[in-house]
Amino acid sequence: MSLNQRELVLCPESGYRAHTIVVVDKTDTFSPSQRSYLGRIIRTVGEEMRQFDKLSIYVLDHKNFSAPIPAFDLCNPGDGSAANTLYQNPRKIRAKFEATFGEPLDRAINALATTQTSPRSPIMEMIQEVALRDDFKPRQAPQRLILFSDMLQHMPGDYSQFRDPISFDWFAARTYAREVATSLGGADVEIVYLLNPEYEALQTRRHILFWEQYFKWINGNLVEVRPIR
Image (cartoon, rainbow, N blue to C red; front, side, top):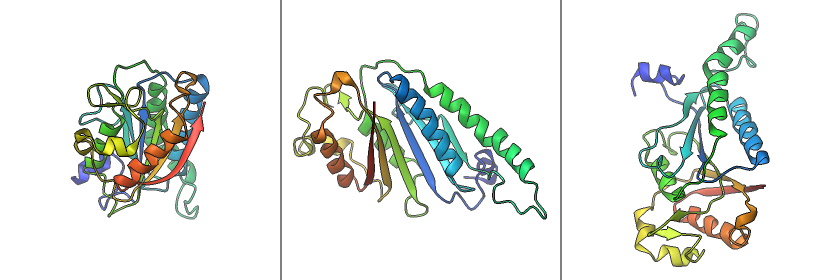
């Protein structure tokens, strides 16, 4: 990446310090509380990042999972909270933060609020695509992946948790498992687990266990599963 390209994403020439990737699954509708929580958690993530940490947001739907383009992809330029008042202007730095990072993030969050039911839910494919991106480099900087999803993989003809056994051993024996295999390089993974009353029979402890085994298999460190109704 050239210097000019780094400037566009507010990253220093030396690169970002850490990288948080948020994947928002829009293949099913959000409840009002889930929609509200989505906005709060993403804004909080952005606010809590250190200067020159990078935030990328991807939308998962049945179309945008092959070479996906991020809906947001910027480094935090610093909000002035750590400014030295002897020779820096915290108010001016905060204003720049809002103009270049905070306001674009709010616009991205607002665009994420709309959802529609999709015929496919390619969660594994999106994880694979994220792991293949040039800026996903766990060995060079800490990586954190946050999935905002019901985690119900649904690719008719390949593997669907609405139809096939929710068994990692059964899944791993399929050719399809090798097709979507990847490596997260030890990155931390958090799941904001969107509960849906219609899927109560599927969203069980067994379902969470499947994903625990899956992330271990692709060298990811699942640190939290946070259920949200």
